Image 1 (cartoon, helix red, strand yellow):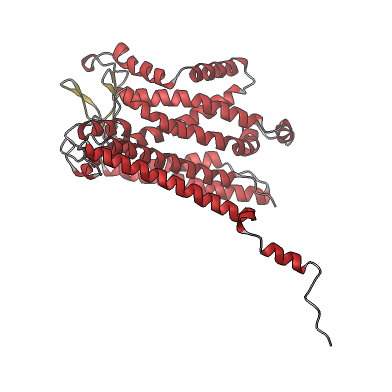
Image 2 (cartoon, helix red, strand yellow):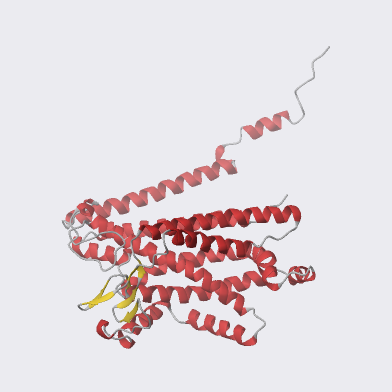
Length: 401
């Protein structure tokens, strides 16, 4: 029995295709072009770096990051960790980075809450509420953020009195041109365990929400998640507080010399920076939320209301889950803008990373390393925020079968 022939009429043609030169193959040409571009970029980077190092040596300017271990010899007004003039430049930069993280994190949380409320109010059927929200958005978007920082910073020094004549609305709160002095819980074990109980309540509320959602998908019954979660978040610390004998010790600020001691002190620079960033960015977040809600068809709302759902349930269970897929991408950009705009703190004297890095550059003369550190730190902040938001975006994305 003869074996089937493997030769076909197209055999010679296929062999000719296999012998095509690489410069006529689109895929191989693409790899060559990419390799060529990569080499050109590498050569350009090598030229710039080597030329910079050569010029620095020619002018007898020190290079490298060895200055990070030297004594900084300057004070920083606000610090989340212990710091003094005897600390190193590296620790000073760490203080600046933590200050940037502090104002950015708090600002993002407040901005999300305020921006969502204003965005929902912009769509309210109440004429006055809708117009006030629209007026807020227009005004805050049209005023540059730097001018807003100057305005709020000037408020403290133009309208508030000195510490000796500080405004005292109630016990534990003082308003002066040195900032806002607030009473805080004293350092006793009860308050530490209350904080742990609060965290435990938040974790329990998270798992309760997941359980309630699966239960609703399975049975169609709605569990009172909001009320139960609120009871756990507030009830757990309350139980611990009662178990420790209901302590009420507070660390109350008191006037000592020309400033307050005790409690917690919020400086004018921090308050002005936080207020300006929040008010400016929340106006853009409000428009993002409004656009996301309006992207959901009216039929969804009408169908939910036809089922007898109340307006709050329609918004939380039907509108917002669908709108979040539209809201998250531009919302990520606004969060990044808030973090990057925090670098304007140098204009009002808040010791963020840029401000501290500029001081280090002025004292050491190593501008290239200082600017490189500023770029690297803000790149890390931005990439971390984008990574988290992209993860959340994928989690809320519509899953197709």
